[in-house]
Image (cartoon, rainbow, N blue to C red; front, side):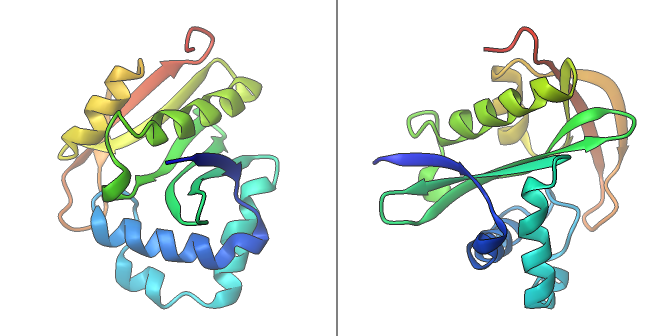
Length: 169
């Protein structure tokens, strides 16, 4: 399967909406938004969200197969306190696993972007998402020791992790 990694643009709002809804349905503990709330967003809100990917303070990447299907997305935003932050990570169930290379390719793109915004890439991951935690550890992220509550049901806590992008491949 041939996959391309590309930046999401405002024109991609329909595809972005479709994969975002799929993300929220698949892993509701990972995105700080409920599926119900996302479903009632207007087309203009989706256009605005997709357009933010190129505003200079954020980036959003999509993994797209040769048939035009979106199989994964990842985003980065620059926060005032923590600098570059990884958010919105998703790979479709049928495309998961190290063999596909999709998560690694998306993350490599976000790491390249993060280098323009400091020496680290931060993320928060729900403590009950072991698959994601294992992926981040494999890619060199380490737990900082900081946690904070996840604000939506089923609640729980999120673990902060950091990657030194000056050392990351």
